Image 1 (cartoon, rainbow, N blue to C red):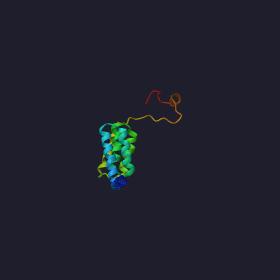
Image 2 (cartoon, rainbow, N blue to C red):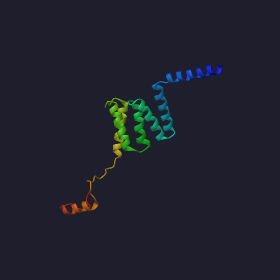
Image 3 (spheres, rainbow, N blue to C red):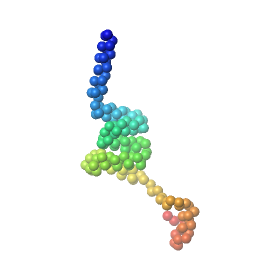
Image 4 (cartoon, helix red, strand yellow):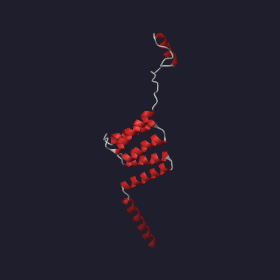
Length: 145
């Protein structure tokens, strides 16, 4: 009988501790895990933990900014970084006085300054068609840019 009583006591303490574990505690735990992963340069793991933070609180600007900076500074994925920076700006209500909004604008500016121009081709264009068009148009040299 004493074993049954001990088992009930352990069960009641376990269920009580689960109820005491709040949403804020869970967010803090995932945030801490993300910080540790970033410190250990495990960037993919950090993104997983940050995604869990954002699933629990989609308006967490610090977590969203950490995702953007991870894409920008560590994973060299500028498109994903810019899209995430834009989400930070929108979540901040486009308020330039918000430090996250200002930092996101700065990140976008920094990424935009690195962008190299990419030639835009019409669908179906290939090298021969462009040379044919240039030869037909007067005053256009085939090698001129």
